[in-house]
Image 1 (cartoon, rainbow, N blue to C red):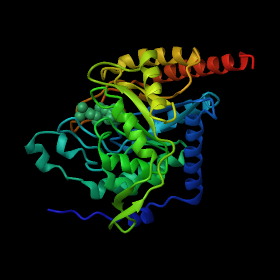
Image 2 (image 1 turned 90 degrees about the vertical axis):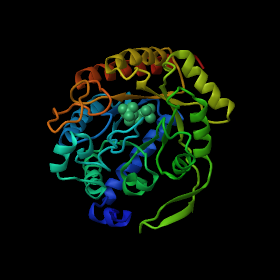
Image 3 (image 1 turned 180 degrees about the vertical axis):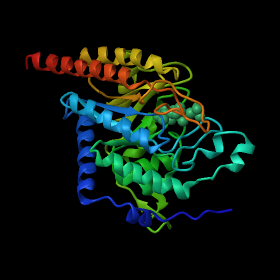
Length: 357
Ligand SMILES: O=C[C@H](O)[C@H](O)COP(=O)(O)O
Ligand SMILES: C=C(OP(=O)(O)O)C(=O)O
């Protein structure tokens, strides 16, 4: 059975972006680009839950993150992870946009049969409304574009985008990155292969013919201008982490050799933490040391963080503020890691000022 979705224009009309909000998103994108270019010496920090599964806890987290962003404004440019789609290794919950009720993953077949099933017809408006509310808090939003056909429904609210480890070799995702109007991070492959991410950045930087739905929902082909702010995200992999000084230098060298800007974001979670949220602060410790030692090109850090630490299986009775996908750091630990990163940025700044010209 098919379920017909509204067109992007219909959804945008029912959940509009005001001129003021569009201006705020454009400002956030430009600010992120300036950090990636090294014109702004702050550190980009993309922090937030692995996945968004309900509006209340996400808004609660966002308000608390906004306070931390204001506290560290001079040193860190903090972006909220607002991931409504999840790429899965195997079968698993695909995220709020496609399954907002978490119905297909909550319980056994008997209980499932009794639950009202919500799907993308509910998830799209729910997700877009939530992104608009989050963006109204004046926080830049990060989003992983998993399903290219859904990008036109949300992209106008996103300030930083990701092409994930599982899709980084997919030509449609690389071409989508070249069409998107915000900086895009391309992650290394799940096995740790960084060359695929460098290739993705190369493709995203160029112009291509991209097939995506137009405003009316019809498939359309458009010519892209290329994304000048595509960059690599090091997320470690099944063969081990890649956040240490040698791995970071190696990635920067590969980018330079490919004729691309030498800048990376490092993800403290996923393959770099072995998906153990208690290890994220150790990764941050190493990154902070590299930054304090003057490492240029290390433009940003990604953290998986939510109100409370850890994660929980999807059941009908979810605990508040705990991830339903990868384990996250709690807010207290997150606050400590942000403080450490801000201190490192100040040390890097002071060392630069002290260098005689
Ligand atoms: O970031 C979240 C997960 O790592 C990603 O969606 C894959 O999760 P899975 O391996 O549990 O499917
Ligand atoms: C799925 C994610 O990461 P990765 O693609 O690195 O596994 C994520 O950041 O949510």
